[in-house]
Image 1: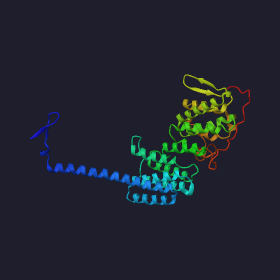
Image 2: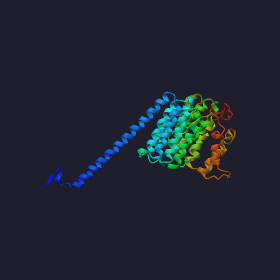
Image 3: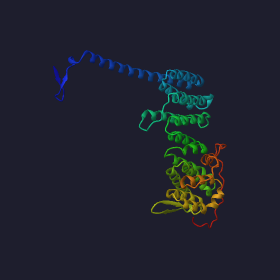
Image 4: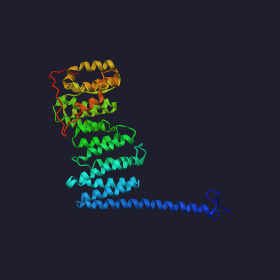
Length: 380
């Protein structure tokens, strides 16, 4: 006999289902219940571990907490339970970093953070996938949140940044590292007034990085002479051009010049519009105008126009003394104007004076000044 379903179709009654089928159903629900229970127990166990270590950290037992967290994490890693190890290490690192540098607490936190990347993310071979992968997003978010917990004076922060970039370059789609991680690192350095390190990451960041970089360069510019604006603007524009990111280069210049005109209304900025583009003209700052015209020239793709532009501003460019390599590379990259090969111009330029080199200190040194233009200078 068959019963009737809600739609009138025949369905087997419970008595007609085979004993084996009923048994399989019960077995499936039984194991599902076990799985859920185990996951809940594991989560509860990890929460208890972190809570106990948090108490030790609050009592100042930083070394003891650090060692116990490492031992517990290693146990999970040996079991290939990488998710549990990640929660233990991230939770412990966060608490120790919050405790500050007293008795080496933040250094211990940095050690756990680095262990998280090397022993979990790398060994588990966790990949960076598309934005629609919630698990991948969550893992990357964990690293970014942990980065912001580092005190600015904690030496292990730089090593942690190096490790997360190396991991993202190995297991992500871009060998140079994940843009969101670069943006986070650059933003951290920018907030701590470390412009050279900030620049190196922001130029490889996201679409939001251009604004952060432009604001950083403008703040740096405000401690220098007004007529040096082009030097700082170029630091926000040229790196993006050299990495093929014309959109961010335009965005960075727009933000920089907007802040410049608002801060110095006496410069007499003029907005010039055409059917194809808009530009701000600064009569007293010819090299700022040069950068604006350079971006327009790149959009047009005219090599002759590029040659004429650089020739027109040759005297001012020579006074800066920093742009020759960058402009030569831009000429080759966008206008197929060949330059003699002496090493890697892009890398030479990025590691040279324009980016501070390897000897830059935390506080930005004053950039080379451009001689102030005469008061009677005509509009460029």
